[in-house]
Length: 282
Image (cartoon, rainbow, N blue to C red; front, side, top):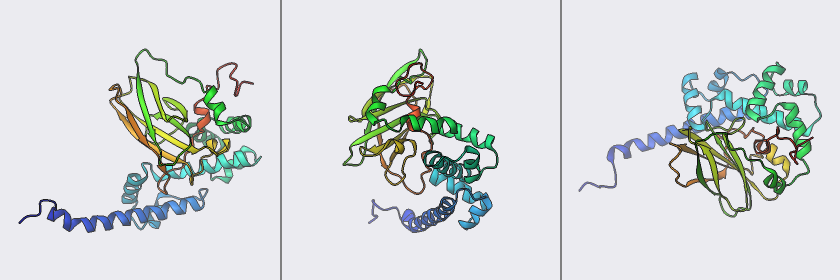
């Protein structure tokens, strides 16, 4: 009698598939560990592929499958994360920071930093110094309405599910791609009840809702430089925006294959150009 619950072909190929997946994860892990050991090193694709014992093209494909980004983008995120740390924890001039993290051009570094983090290095450092003594409740109270200017809007109901027990806050952002970069289409901050309605332009046919969760006891520094060992993350694709259904996003601990969160989360919630802003108006 045929066992209806078992596909013989799948049963024969499954062990091989598992071995292949394990090899891919181990190979990419070795390359990521090499990048993390010294992000400033000149690590070409050929070097990383050799570390992973793969051809360049095979390595590139597998790396992107496991991390959602290219090796170059992952390395850039590690460099920018280190740059953020140096900007927050030292008084080094920006020209020195640029060299410390592996770039030779201040212009190139500043362009990448601004695009990924959401503020240029000078503003990032200055804003942190202004925010350092604030609490999460200050951010919740003074976050500005970041809804885009559009006559075609609809509400997207979001429900965030963290692993229990969890007491803290969650930053939410709607981005065009699966990796957060720069300013979101719209963003908000949840503290307490992890449910909200986002007002979203209906012109977007697809986007990605990304979340970062923090325990209640963390300092303001963690929002500018999220610690990978304790920050919770989540992502969900938003297709055919306009349906109006509830959207659930689950949070999980970060893993080795997750690129660092390089955006300056508090700056995505505050309109720095709005006159008289209580948090950063000067």
